[in-house]
Length: 594
Image 1 (cartoon, rainbow, N blue to C red):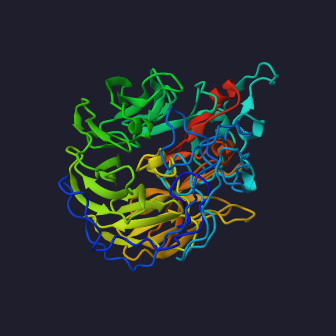
Image 2: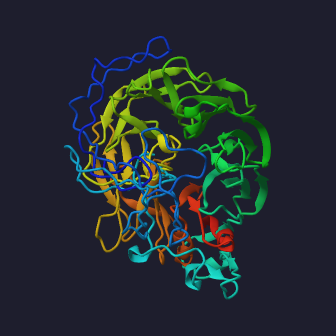
Image 3: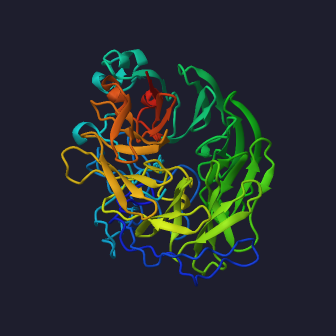
């Protein structure tokens, strides 16, 4: 696919040279470590859908935190202050899709992707968005870029009165005050058939110089919670009233995609406030229904490689995982008891999915000079024991898991990207074959560069099909895209559904047998929640966001979108503004309903 597995720079090509699964003679995993032998792959001669993915994501500023790049990964450039403060970010932005081009930095290595070595995808760039896709799928994939009106740049959160953000007093060079819009103001121009702004909340937090990423949203009963910087806050889903606020002693540095069924979450925070020496090593449990802090413990990350590794977290049942490149730990959410940790042998899981099925990405390396081989396993969430093992072909690594049932995984090489479907027992089923450029919203380019394994949006799957967004076409006057349905049995595309004119559309999940999608707002046109019929791709609107709130909605940086019980909840992936008051007034949660 031309989409990269990850967050950002354009990826070259589409599903290019084939990804050949390991032959029947592939060497088994290291013996004696509890791994069943890998399932034979029947698909070496299958046509391959794997395009080329960009090389180093050079335009991306470093993520907040103390972690240096992993060996073999590109060094990120020094952060810069963007000309449009609402569009900072760790997300490389593609010129021409609503973002101004980023200024070059001397530290940014050039992208290395080139035309594919075969396959059926065109050699055009794909883009991924961090922090989902980005969902935000941000994930080894492409980036979804929210657009302004007619492809223009996004407006700052504080700006002219018609963009939903207006100063409460004339600004001066020395003393500026900003106030965000109210729900009543945004609803004043609402038209018949449009939903209303149910409520919204400002950020209210003075953030560090380059802003911060949001954590969540997490739902627990009648509470929606989010984390930002050194605070986690819970709001009433009905009216947005603040139910509780929990201050944290240090920065939020990792969190699972979803909480437990009974509304508990465990987040990662740094062990001190030093910018140069802090380690993402402290776990803090929080009851999202009450805002009460529960157990707290520090994970030993004294090993050099462990200390450098990014963290991936997930919750499956009553188990929370804290994954790193060299070791992973799992704890019981309810009481903090350690359930399993580093394995014996040379194969170590480094990330897990959450939800009812725990899928692990596993890396095997006997000696530092040996090539790394990676595997996918389903593991028991209580013991960590593998139920089956699927070994990737040499040179390929796990980027993200797009779906656990059916099991759809994103895999990558430095300049290639592939999507593979596995059967429930871990045997190979198919690989996607397409002719488009694709975009997925994921928190990062891949789990190895800072993303959760299961945090991508822009994808969905049911028992027979996989649904994937395309990127807007280069050079088009209005930026619009499609959703493509692939047959899971063959990997071939079945239908392509165009987004409403001038808009970008991406799948969220399955909803009552249909593909739930979000259509993004443009500057003077509200977004909406809709569905696609799995049999044909026919589009239907579920919730139409008001055009009167489009300026505020389109100001949210690559929004995370959730749809529950007839309401849509939007949170920006990241908040950053030049001025402190402007940053505090930035919209942090925007909710629509009937």
